[in-house]
Length: 219
Image (tube, helix red, strand yellow):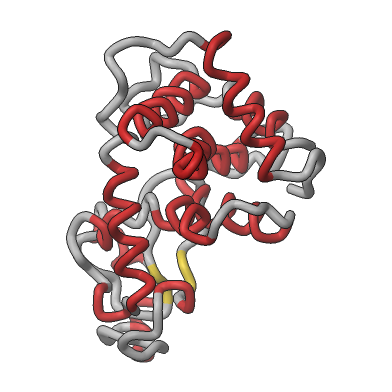
């Protein structure tokens, strides 16, 4: 299916973890994109506008016509595997039920990694962020790499809000962190006060999708 097909599928889902469930998902996508566009206007930042519009499309994993994954493994925080679970991760008490917590190789600060290895070399937990990132990469999306990283790490809250796992960062990750933090100002709990006029703004995002994505994609 096309990226636009996936956007429309997302509009049929209600994210149980989203505090704005009274709004259709496409409204959230437009509000995020338009909020970013208002602060970062112009063609130079069109990649950021499109990231705002597409960042949650990976939630189609939970759609019954696609993979029908349970929402607990699609939405919510993401975090690295193969190292100690940081207490800044939401609901850390539930990690006591994860068998990795009893594996000494996975319970040190660095675990199976080395300091400064770079976030791209970490194995991240599965969810809509990682799925969407992989879909973009494997389908030859031409968005700049920083755009794909914002998609991949936007739910990595323990990192971009609490500085957890910063010992794994390299110089490139410092640039990514700045953009992820900027993006977050326009995502959760930061909706625009008015609903965007879909007829006016949707063609802009459809045009960007046509520019950066192939017409048909593997999901």
